Amino acid sequence: MMAVRVKAVLFDIDHTLLTEMPLIQLFLPQVYEKLSKRLGINKEEARKRFLDEIFTRRETYEWHDWNFFFRLFGLDMRYEEILKRYPHKLRVYPDTIPTLEWLKGMGIKLGVVTSGPEYQRLKLKLAGLDGYFDSIVTRDDVGVIKPDPKIFIRALEELEVKPGEALMVGDSLWQDVYGGKNVGMKTVWISRDGETDFHMADFRIRTLHELRKIVVVVE
Image (cartoon, rainbow, N blue to C red; front, side, top):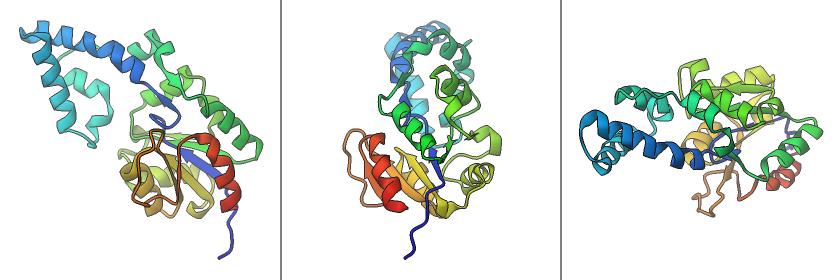
């Protein structure tokens, strides 16, 4: 089979390029406190109700938006404001920037495909990553989340590349790997904790540094 040169690499954001876990650990106790006062219940019960709602809606359109849950419980909170207040709580993985710079140096176009809402652009900006990408597509741009083909196709169109000329890199086997393969892209599953992937992805990596050898292999 003839090798096809990789012209673009598309990335997921959370748990791929960065983690917002330190930020989540900071604001969730604030959520529980506000909710307990609002509903007249203890913080543990408030915690259970809030998390139960999140888990019940897992992988749905709404699940990807913190603001949806704030509104659902009548909380006067906005995730955009939390991001702006605590940008230092966004942790960019140490392999992210070196890898993006290397790929850019190779003349490869870079894109982001995220099931999160518009504030994902703000997150990338605050993390100092937005300038690396030629295309950023959120769920709000197309009205769907991964693995719906529309969100991938929009990014490929903006990057002006064919599916077979692009890699999709992400941590979700359902959203990123299945979604990417479904539109004809080669897929890279990043498993930073070493989980097994049942061989669904074309490549499995533990750090983004490994993309350097994958790009060469695919080419």
